[in-house]
Length: 88
Image (cartoon, rainbow, N blue to C red; front, side, top):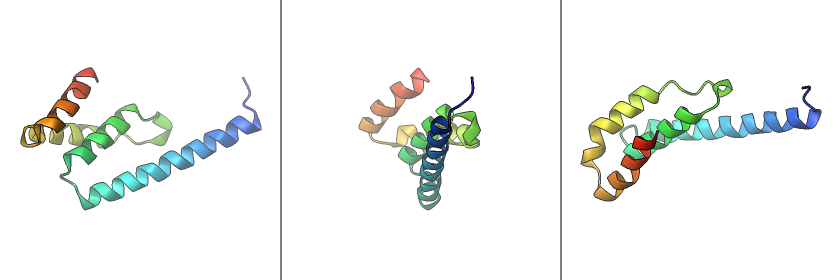
């Protein structure tokens, strides 16, 4: 099926917005590299990111950090993150 000009325009806009969000997330993680919540957010985003974004390079590192340090976090954060990890 041929894409209409409107569909291409929205695809491009979506790509721009996702790329901007990706840059913002990477910037804040570079300032706080051991923040488990930020790494969990990036893990979830990268795990579900469309392949055209080419944004999957930190999945294993983030998962390893989460697995190693989740038990040092508050019980509230653990009870939030663990069920999500188990469902992925």
